Length: 319
Image: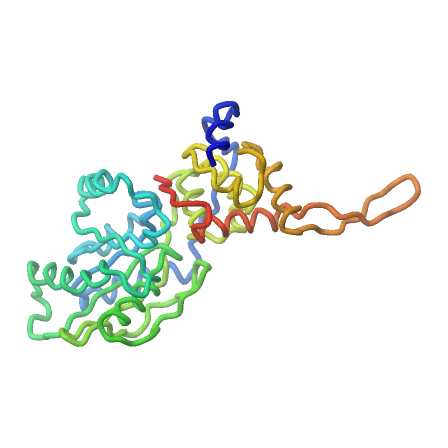
């Protein structure tokens, strides 16, 4: 790694990413529109909104329609996947969120078997509810919460973590690595006994209009948009640009490169060869057609992106 730092002074990295004429596809399928409508319909029975978002993008991609449509109840923002995020400037993040009107924030790793921050959720939610009116259902001593967020930020993992922490019970909500696992507002899921507390799981809902191509690229890199809508090659290139910009060169050691590189073609070719990701193609020659092996750049890009999402390329803050 010391060698990488020495070599980076000799390598000219891109100062900006060329998005060209690209546009990130607006991924707002029918179940998302239906889900937002169902959330609004169920709001009268909800005491508190818990928004889950990826800690690597604490500002980018949060759906503004949530605030416009649902932010009439106490609101808690849980920044999940903190184990993958560089939060060295945590206080700056909290101050900016507060300027945006978000005062209650908890960082968490919902996949961790024992996360002390998960233990803080129920007490903080109770405090928020007790400090706000329950004019519509004051006679009910149970509590109903609604979990919201964009796709694949860990809403189901959050629900399962609460059940594990407060009820000592297993999974109640399906967890998946691809966005779009939860496609409907589900029935109530109990997450606490004392007091009785239920959650409403909801589908991940992206904003119909992603504010910028770069925001869309960050969302894609974190897996909240299906990869093929953007293109694995483009996501991989943006990842390489980001790692180099942040001086994160662990990809060099992981894939056995001699030095950092700003060329995604060079990096993917090396990954493909190292990982044995090749494909056979037909080539036309003067003596007829022959079959040759060439690097599978798409498979290599997929491996590179998945390594980032698993935290194998180091902790990163994209915002």
